[in-house]
View 1 (cartoon, helix red, strand yellow):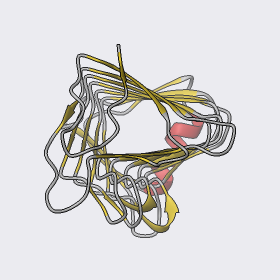
View 2: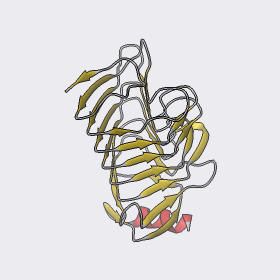
View 3: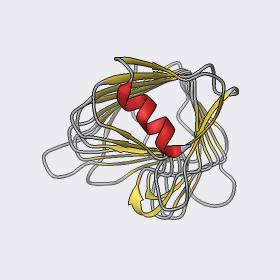
Length: 218
């Protein structure tokens, strides 16, 4: 099933439409593409132990619509669903769940990447270090719109979101109408690492009470 799904994506056009069903990852994304499912309930892509759900080649423009992406387990890597280092990656109407990574249980965006989530649910992911849901590092940019976070866990902070820039580069985070469910156990929902903080702008979204350093609000 893995080979069949990979061949299907490789041979399809610019828009890949996946019908209802369960598919086995990982999926290697090697070109600009839109991957569209029938909805996060009917269409599920599940990876195998030791692999993320998606491996996205740096520098691409990739969109993923209407899928559940689950089961990525990469305890020595970043991003259980995917890690993006350059280019533009957008998830719309997706559920990202049941993944584990060393940093960014579901997603990691680093370097010069631009990552967008719209109308998504990020739930039940685990980071061995920071960012149970999403980790953003370097000079990456993250846009969250109408997305919910729940039951994500990170051992070193930022159960839902972990942000750490580097000297001379600060991540940019824009948040619009996002829901952060209370965290279970100790730690904060958002970790914005002191000395390497990202720049936040919030619209219609409360800053979690368990997280310090309230950012700029739009």
